[in-house]
Length: 149
Image (cartoon, rainbow, N blue to C red; front, side):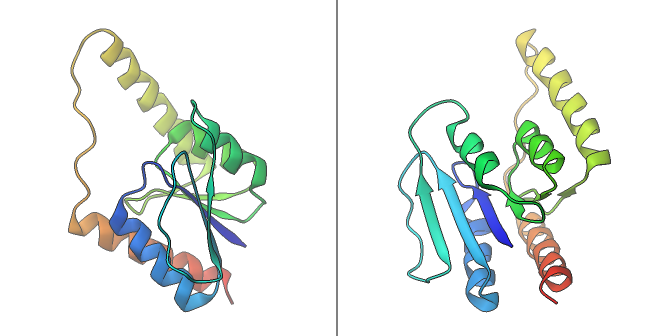
């Protein structure tokens, strides 16, 4: 099993939690982004820098992911594609997406897209807070406890 991170938009505190978990468990962690990233010098933590462009990092993750890998992303269309491939998807806010929940998320995303294209300002997601970080860390710990035994 590998943990893949859609790293361009992944908050730094979430990356820090992932680095600690990878070091503690020895699980492979790979961050994929359009830019160079600093990662700790730990042998099971790697990064892949892809070229600039729309969905280039997403496409690289989809290409490499295996069933039962865990992917960290808040990108709903990417999450849907990964779930279809049999992967597990966890948001940086600690929400584990499923084949059931992702369809509702896609519908809401499309609705909000329509609102924004109609010049209705919907605001963006709230800034990551301590509760979100704790929720992510707890969800990650639960997942790792279930899948590393």
